[in-house]
Length: 111
Length: 113
View 1 (spheres, rainbow over the protein chains, first blue to last red):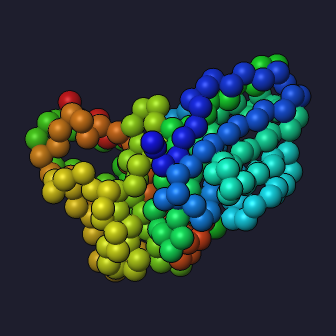
View 2 (view 1 turned 30 degrees about the vertical axis):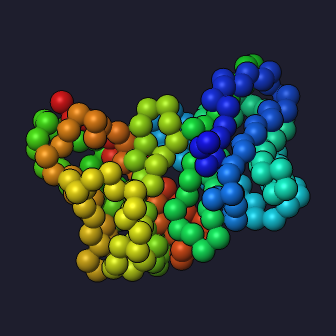
């Protein structure tokens, strides 16, 4: 089992809808989690970080962490065509340093 | 302020050649990381520096790969006897300290012919 897993997509959503992305992880990456957005040919850009169980909201983005079930999700509300990108989930273990990334989920927002 | 910068942005080399990739982290960030990203995959960890020392080099694939950070700021990733399988985007990231958010540079796209 990979340490961080994501559905590769593409996840196609109409403009204005909610995009829901999921990520599961193993015990080895259990401390902190990060969602990065990566446009084609560009480097990853941090969207959200989440460290404790529950929800964390920032603008149109909501991250959810459930440590008991070992999953972390990202909701994008009112999706815009500019949200079309690959979303990378990454985990950092306690006292760790390296991020462990999933393979990314490609999101396509159609006007 | 200035973000992480990497040079060159693109590097094309021939199999067997030596290459150096440079990373200039955000000013004041003590932690520096190198990752490698192949097409369609997430970044994979290579090496982590805390200050001048390589605190974790467990991700380096073999002894052809080496990295330095002599003054605790700029880092250079060195690849000897390049192989076609080394072709990828090499990403550098920095953070204020070990467990803080990592910010990525634009990457260097390495192509080995």
